[in-house]
Image (cartoon, rainbow, N blue to C red):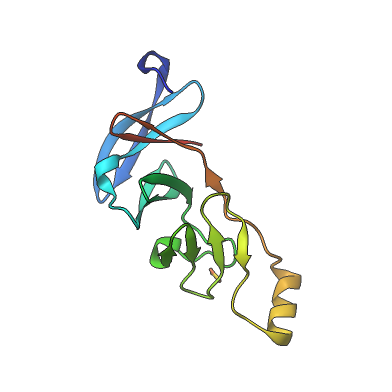
Length: 141
Ligand code: FES
């Protein structure tokens, strides 16, 4: 649990066009959103500095990850969420938001898949630890 006395720096957090000032504590947890910003089974993008971070709420647990597909950079919030499995809309790669592991690297088959894996080998989605403090969602960057 993060204690309020641990906050020592300020960063800018932007969401839905609204900008708020948040804080980063000594362990690197940053307030990125409010619990009420997300309904169960949904995800949204939040901007933290120059990073686009996806935050998802699934069965009242929160997950955070880069909002950029490791395959070819599609914005993952344009994709589909089924439980903790996130499917990229561009080439149907699937990642688990729990740990970022690749469940499927594109839906390509045959020679296309083989050549693609040579140049773009499967890479996990970068995920971030999440903590809840009161009604604040914090991520560790
Ligand atoms: S860009 Fe996401 S699967 Fe290709």
